[in-house]
Length: 162
Image (cartoon, helix red, strand yellow):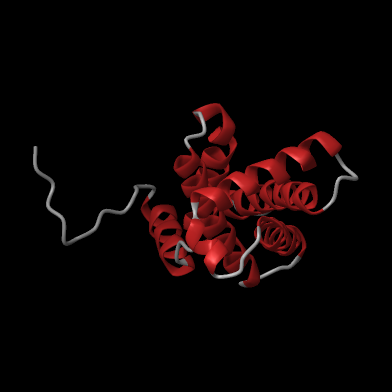
């Protein structure tokens, strides 16, 4: 039977991956939702206006939107379908993208309801990354010690103070 940790990582990976595949696709094409696509176009134009340094570097709102959308789509696919360490890399890239998008929303003064989903998915990405990076040895040692005497092991270096 799969461990609760494995089930958690699998469920978070699948849900987050599918969400970012969906969001990346909306940024790239109007086929899923014309309204959402046009809203994304408008939002990225306002982000670029708020950051004139990007415009001086030759970055257009279309390039910015398509880059973010492509990264979300690619990382979402990896998070959903690819096993192993690439999931952690995709998770980290998506977490950086979420932080950048949150920065953009704050920069243009969007209300919380416009970026609440980014906050929630940023927290979920952080949780997935923390759970997946928890050392396996530590988990096995705790289980072995707990099964031997039925008690939860304590760190011998820590003293219990009443």
